[in-house]
Amino acid sequence: MKNHLTCRELSRLTGMASSFAVRRQLVIGAFIVAAAAAPVVAAYHTPESGNPLAECSSGEESDTFTTTCVPFMVPTSPPIFTTTAANPDVPEVDGIPCIGHNAGGCIGLAEDAQMEGPPAQPRVTISSSP
Image (tube, rainbow, N blue to C red; front, side, top):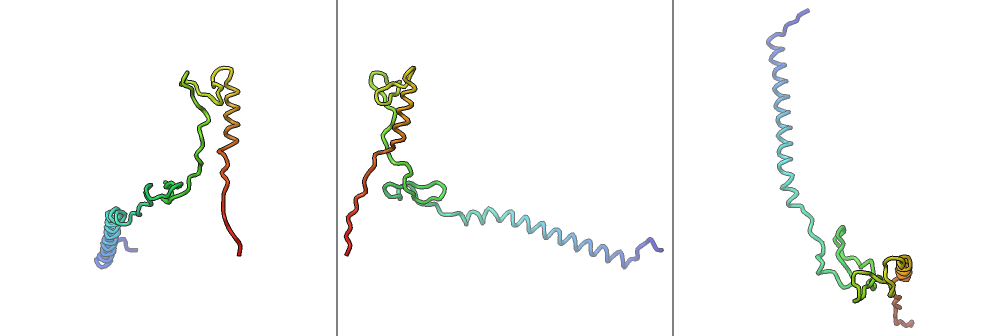
């Protein structure tokens, strides 16, 4: 059995090794070009911004996630807690201060006011049938 390579076999093996090295360098170069081109492509393909706040109609606001105008979700209602001029540091509900032994009554009145919600506004439509 022979343990040595002939010149022909040796040149064939080194030729394969050099072609593998060239292919490897081409693949590495392609990845470098792709990595360098990615920010340029991203800069040209940025999405357009949605409607600014000024473009939404009355009763609508701009949604941060969908960038479209959506109706207000919470109707305007008067505040539940108020303060008096005598002691502006203590909140009140229906004239009952929310401190000390009145705290339970104040919390109960606040919960009742929240359950009632804003006053109902009737919908008025005028229609006729032919």
